Length: 371
Image 1 (tube, rainbow, N blue to C red):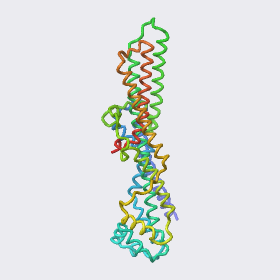
Image 2 (spheres, one colour):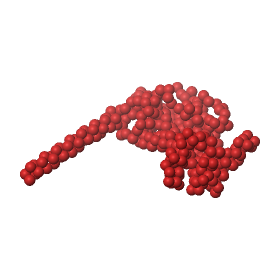
Image 3 (cartoon, rainbow, N blue to C red):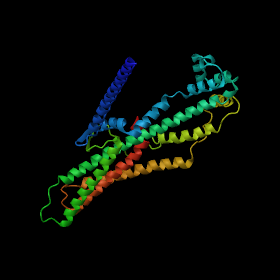
Image 4 (cartoon, rainbow, N blue to C red):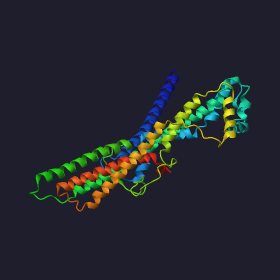
């Protein structure tokens, strides 16, 4: 009994020691991760990075972008036809997947479903909607991939809007803060105007920095972005682009709407006879290919609204650019030594801000930005 008690005590002691060591090892690993994250968020020093480095970091730290990227990868890499086929077959017959379809035959069936699938599955009554379910799964994954791509694009546009705005704010703030001091007997209204403009710019930068912190999911002390050649276009030299070029403009958003419409039409066309719909549609597609165009799937109002949005934002962006260029060409001093000069700088700043806002909408719609 004494030996057993000693053995139990030793065993308990060993287990406790092992648990303690395991906890300590994990605490060390998690502690390092914590320290690295604190350093990454740089609570006491300004972070400096190029625009391209910011884009890379955003893809690693931005929660919405990471989630959308994972969803996109899953949707694109998924093989809904094969998985659904395996599930339906296993649910329907007491045979394994390999007993029903050999891999070579399965690939042949999926590459020529109009003739192969209905013939192979005609005897399985529970599989009458198999081809419909496979296609429905494909629609679902297609919709998921488009949604995810749109979300990734939105976050990237948000980053480039912040890059442009940061450059604009920092440049104007530097002009104000490095301007020659006003004389002691300067007009109090001028002193107040300069001070007020400096204060508004500082407030703008605080709001901007808060957005940057949220985008990168990090409480940076401060951030400075250095421009390189990775920015999205400003369109300042573009005059009359061909906005009717539908493969370039609005294609991704239109794809989202189109997938929704066609997916709904697919759900409502559930066949009652095994293989009937897929055979008739495939044959009709082969026989009548090129003879007639398909009926429009999108509502006229939706297409019209999309076109108006693009044209409106393009026009207002170009108007802001033209007015800003007019201000810049007539500017002869950045001394901020008169109220009209300060008012002019404020107007110029707002025009450039407007330009960036409208360019952000155009970036979302322009496929050339994403090729």
